[in-house]
Image: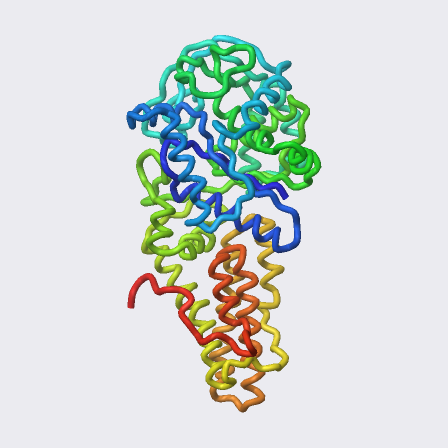
Length: 474
């Protein structure tokens, strides 16, 4: 499976909204690797944006300095968010990107032409709109731009795209987003501008082949990363022959990924992505979280304050498959304390403590009783992740904890005879081990701690120790 995230602008440091997307992609990558499937998980940064140029000007630093610094912050999410991406692509410095964009441009030359254009331009979206305000809520007023650009004959691909999306290539989920794309196509397509003047772009970006007075439009440039980052044999392996090519993205960029990008690929005679999953937004106080203004939430700072487990768990356990999720630190703390400290951590410590109390740390050699949540967790997690329902998948893992804690209260091992107690303890240790297995894609570091807590060394379990801190105090 080839799993990609969008590549964000680097006009500022990362925020929690992008953390949602990259953590979702990481869960999918870890899950499919665990199933023995080949996976390439790719992310990166969109360096060649006018937003980046303007941010550098506002900061009084060279564009390259700002881009390098902020791109490093995005790549640096690997540690604070416990990520496992295989490739990180920067559009201003990846050795194959510029040449790949130029190849794609030439491959679509039959659909490219120059003409004068005038319209309202949103720097925040790097897109033209017919009227104000910007649908994404960027506060800057739209700018009227008048210049001659290169255009792509998007209108030529309306019917082919309608046929393909109706047939499920690419399959767009949730269905409401598929319907949104179909409605957009059915309303008609106009050709789109795919270059900007080098003067307005301050010379930053990839020059149009054969026309150095123009630079390639940042979205054309950025979308190409999904194939330009595939060096040598990787292109054939992961784009031409891979049957599962998945793009994850936020709802604000669906038109670019589900209409413009497939049309570009059709024009070039290249394969299309097979699935597109569109998530909604993480908000704060009901407002979309943004890098450059308004509501903010720094995932690195949150991870430093509360731990990576708490941050990942909130994103996976609280954000619905459809609909925005409003973030507060209080909600993060409450969820971590309820599920991790009081739930999983308390369960594992109770079980290990009882094994030491009654068995001197030795796990009974008894047949575990079947617990429904533990027995079916793997199946339920897979079904939920196939549907991109991360909250339901995380709930299937949490169900192991809930059922095992209920089992403790029902059987009360400390009151059983030795034979019954051995069966109960064997059942609980087995449930904790299954918890570690199923938790791994969601909280990989925590899963290793849980696994170590119920792993025998020299015939005994380690002494019980806290696995998750209580964040709320008390």
